[in-house]
Length: 74
Image (cartoon, rainbow, N blue to C red):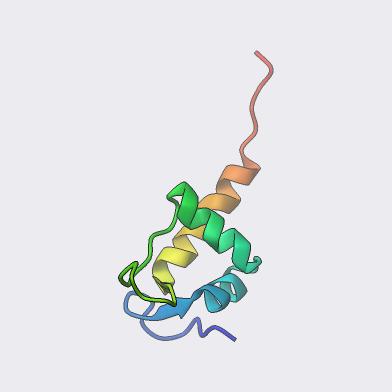
C-alpha cells in the first residue's frame, strides 16, 4: 500500500503505488502522463517510471474537480 505519511514532496511512487494511492487503475496514471496532468520524476530512460507523491495527489484532485464540473445549457 502506498504511504500517505511522510514528505510528499520527496516521496517517489511507482505507477502501481500511485494508482493505489489515487484509487484508480495503473492505466489511468499512464493516461494522466500522456495528457500532461502528471509528469515523471525520474529520467525517461529508466525502465520503471516514478512520480512524486504530491504530483499524484494534485493530479487526482484536479481530475476529480474536472469531473464535477457542470455546464449550463445557454
